[in-house]
Image 1: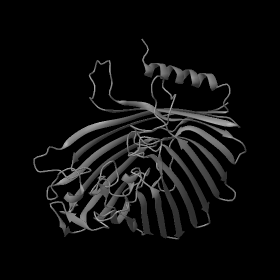
Image 2: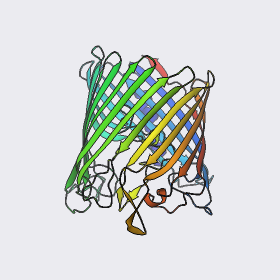
Image 3: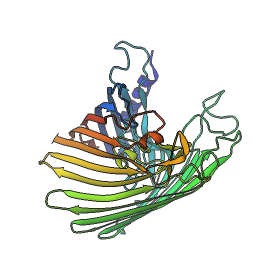
Image 4: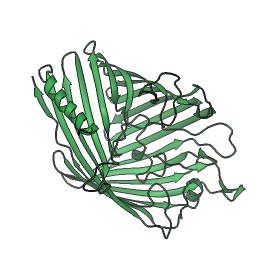
Length: 435
């Protein structure tokens, strides 16, 4: 008996063979990326008698792309699993096997095209729209994407639109209504992104309209939250400066008014020893006394990249009080030492505090300190050959007592909270052949 996976792979191989006669260029590639993690206070505070966790998770991908003068297609499938999660002889498999990318793109002109299907979105530094490559499964969207890029003028314009729906009986599609429940995703989304590059400066503008099914309604009511952003970077010799500003308005999924913002600035100096970056991120939050949602939501960003590698903030977990995010102030110093031709050491230091007043969970009339904690992150990267990388990482959270008040899971700020990991990445250069 063929299962769904064997059928899919058979179809995939037939597709590769069938289109070779049509394609001007064939691309084939693969990635194997196992990562082991020791978690002892990762994402949330641990406790003295709580045992640490250890596991190895692996991403395995295979992809193929085909391109002609007028169109191109790409298929990228992946298997995500934890080592030992199934019996050696098994008939069922709880691992994730899915399609990470499946899209086709038609070129109206060399500059203008439309891409349809499942695809990652990764813009600027991935703060708001990112492919989430750190996570084994990544992030992708189902949408239509219009692309206009003028290389000679050094500017780009992308515009995308999506409408999501769940299946329902008596068939895998719908016969009536469009209520979208059971999935943590937008029901409808539109965005536009513009970038212009100058000699030493680049400027980007972003607009995103995010529609969520209202959780308190039984009809098709959708609440739309709008995000407006401007991102700028400038380089002058050994000095680089940059800044970002995001504003969110509209309604959240509970149909409450939203008024939130994110402001970020950084300064980088390339010294003779190592580049040094100093900066601050401010994400607005909601206090227990606020009646409006003032919590900025970095909806589809690669948050692991920004707010500490231990993922205490905005990475699939909650921080805040009264069921609302308290936001974040993050003052950081980052550097990257080049230890040799094939080795470098990344070092980050974060000082976290709350931008809003916090109260004692046991006494709502008593305010507590805003300091949340200090985190140090180190990553040693070794690239012995092209397409093969080994990473070793260690992070430690020196939490303040107020960290206990904003985390949903009980924990002890005075206990050792640390995280260590290793990752091996086999990603050989993709095979390309012209026809």
